[in-house]
Image (cartoon, rainbow, N blue to C red):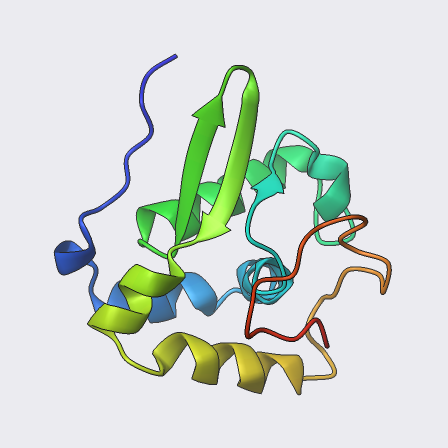
Length: 129
């Protein structure tokens, strides 16, 4: 399996971040991921409220290529997380502002209230949607 491309954080442009997050599905994925440290992407069924598994793979790729997320492979599993520390250092306050604004949007696609089952919520972050 070939390695996945992750742009260097210094090469991440604000326009690329905004373009990636202009899609409601990708913005919904970001809001869902903001509540956890890592999600096993192999369980696409966790995100099927947003789209089909093949379309989700496309959206996960767009988020990764824009520098918003990181995909870590371990065996046959793939783990997805937000590059929060790097993005906060490069664009202070941007990610929190986007996430909080998106959480107030009643039209944003959302996962059910039981998601993520058994996932650990990051320190300092709330699990409110």
